[in-house]
Image 1: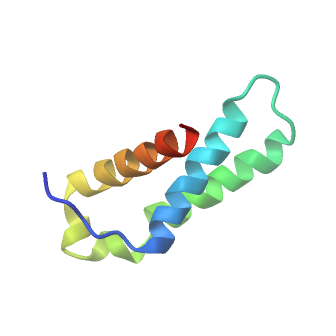
Image 2 (image 1 turned 90 degrees about the vertical axis):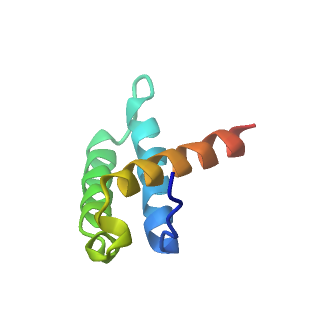
Length: 79
């Protein structure tokens, strides 16, 4: 598998997306409207990031790798 060098701001946005999603998925979340709006804004920031227009970002595997890498960071932080 190719390893992509993702921009720091893209990695940070994806990590924030995961955190926000988990907060929204928690039982009886508070501030659901705020969380949904944040999730939508982060989704747009990730989707339209300039990295995806580069040759490295054009491969479908790049988006998958970003999600997997940030998910791995999440599990490492939880341990």
